[in-house]
Each structure stands twice: as C-alpha cells, then as structure tokens.
Image (cartoon, rainbow, N blue to C red):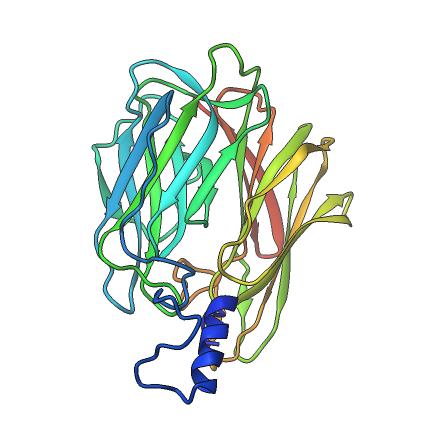
Length: 340
C-alpha cells in the first residue's frame, strides 16, 4: 500500500498499525508517531543544510512549487563558478523532500553557452550534448572517490542540474524544491585517473495491468574498466532491482540488490570491480502492478515506469567521458562519448 503507488516505509506501517490498534483516534496521534509527514521518511519542506566545501565550489538550484497531484522535472542551466580548472574527488548532495532524482551534467562541447536559468524538461536530456557526471535518488549523498581518481572540471564550463520533484502518491513536495551540491576539489596533482558515469536505460519497459513482470538489459564495456559505484532507479511499481556480472552472454555473480522503492542505495565497490573489454553488467527490474492501468517507459512516476541503471567507473580515455547503455526493441547498445 497505498494502492497503485510506492510502498510505505517500515516506520510508517508501524504507525498505521498502532493507529488501528488504538481504535483509529480522530486526532491521528498514537504512540510512536513523531509528527512526520507519512511516506517520505522525513521532513518534506524545502529546508536543507549543506555547508560549502573547504576547497571547491557549491551549486544551488531552486525549482518552483509543484501542485498536489503533479510532478515536474526541471533543467537548471548554470556555469561552473570557478575561474580555474580543478579536479573533484568528492560529491556531497542535499535535496528537499519529494525529490525523485537529481543529476549533474556538463556539456561535451566546451564552447556551449546556455543562458543561466531553468526550463521544464520532463524527458531525458540529449545524450549527444550532455555528459552525465553524477546521479542520485537519495536526499543526502556523500561520495568520496577512490584515491587518485577524480573528475576534471574546466573553469566556467557549462553545467546542467536536472531535478525531479514529485507531489503524487507517497512523495510529497512542500513549497519550492531545493538542491545543493558540493564539488570538493582534490589536492592539486593528486588525481592520476579520471572517472566517468554510465546511464543505462531500458526503453522497452512495459508493465501490463495486474502483472508482476521482470525485465533485463545489458551494458557491455568496449574498454578495460573498473566499476566503483552503482545505483538503481524505477517508479512506483518497482519492487526489486538487481545487477549481475555479464560475460559472453552469460549471467554471473550478483553484485547489487535492492528490495523496495524509496532510497535505492548508492553502493560503493571497494575495491572497484575490474572488467576486461567485452565484459559488462546485466541489470534487472521487477514490478508489481495491482491496478487496471498499463505502465510503459516514460518520465512520470504516476503514469510511466523506468528501469534505469546508473554507475561510475574509471579510467576514462580523456578527462571528459561518459557511457550510455540503451535497450530498445530488444537490442542493448553501448555508446562511449568524449568531449569535442
């Protein structure tokens, strides 16, 4: 429950049980109820706090309020607020309640200049234009890369922060949506290998009415790669996300497992998992749909479904590189893009 939406978290279920056992008091207050809004695991207002880094830069974007029963994905365009190049070896992220995801992108074209501001962008960005740097579905993230590994940023380069705030079902956005991100600068000269991000999409997703389907997609790496972190992503019907090693068309060891909808873990692989050229990952999604509706691939949590995989790797062949792995019409395609 709730019907057709994401399951409530364990603490909320216990509160509902206690309320029923207490005779459903009209006040709604029972032992164990600490007054939090139900379903999002904590405060949903726009108040967040993240001190700026000692070295590096802080990015902060604001999305307009989302009406009840609606959701909105926004693309916020801004320049890196630095007049010098630097390497980043740690990302810290804080977003207000109701967030479904936050992504940081930068332009492949070093000369691209988009006026600062934001626009509604409910579909994925153009992968030929924008390089994914980091992605998270958590309200609070703090990721430090392995020693000697980092992302290289150029002074004043074009950035895009994509936010997705939801005011539907078990996600609630109160007031403006806020997102803050710290790009912590590494000690000069300490980064010897550069990192990249992987965006995996299964565009064949189809969850029929009253069904419990499972779907898989693959990402095969053309170059030797070390996988240092990963996370899964789906919508309200999603119940189980897994990843497996993939070699020569055969599934191997499972390396990621998450049961539930809210807060899929951002899992670090320490040490990073090595892959030879031609090896890769298979990701798998399982959904439960107890409604009369069909949910196909699309951007909206309430009316569409996703089966996306995000991962982070090194080394790259250039200081600016990313990989997309997209399944369409039964075929998974891996594309490596670098800055031009």
